[in-house]
Length: 76
Image (cartoon, rainbow, N blue to C red; front, top):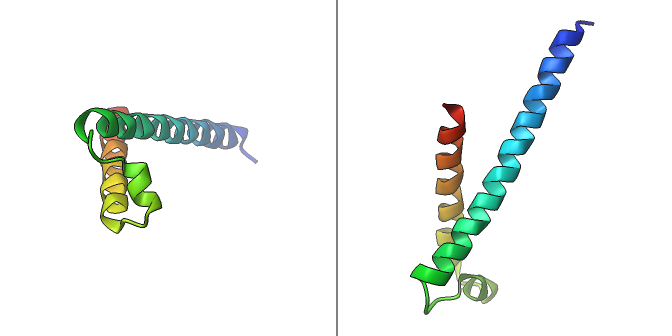
């Protein structure tokens, strides 16, 4: 077995894991900032808890866009 291949795969796995963790934290931070400063009259977590599908779609779209931006930034 070629150990350089295993090492390269391990490095790529760690890089992807780091990307996932960074995307998660930035996404949650973006959601908190948006919820606190831009949507002062609407509590997204409460609305999602009530079963508001539109709020859930909005929150997931925000997280998706943040992940795309982070992905493009890390790709360069």
